[in-house]
Length: 188
Image 1 (cartoon, rainbow, N blue to C red):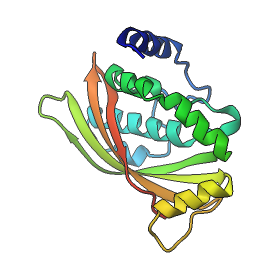
Image 2: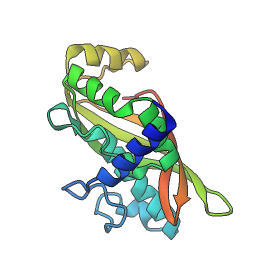
Image 3: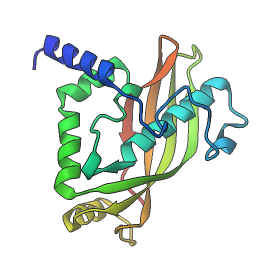
Image 4: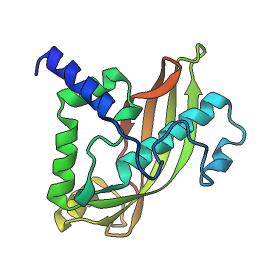
């Protein structure tokens, strides 16, 4: 795919991003009751970054193969990260993974471990644990998930597990966006 086609697709994705009907993905919404204690002593930037991170976790983990949006979190990314995802066929790979394995998963909660904002207030690194429950999936998916999980306990349908995410977020025209992220292996 050449650069012009990638840019056109990125613009189409950005323009085509629709708000989620249950308002879980909206940086400008008021904070819901869950996680309110996490925000009480935070600066405004820390509150916004945590809200962005929570919305990101919800978009990644509240998924159902029967009504899947493979780009539910795309509006939370910087354009540079979005271009990389498009180059790597992220949307198609996500849809394929969920459809082939018949995955239905649910966001449970998150625990913020650290947040470091740069002196110029232009970027930050946030580390947090995201608890997810796979409600249902094919057996082969659970086998693969448990192969990656080096714990004694096994992940099965309905078993919550945590994944540690590290996010690099940047301000883009005054709005915090995710520029890169990394996920650890799953833990029970």
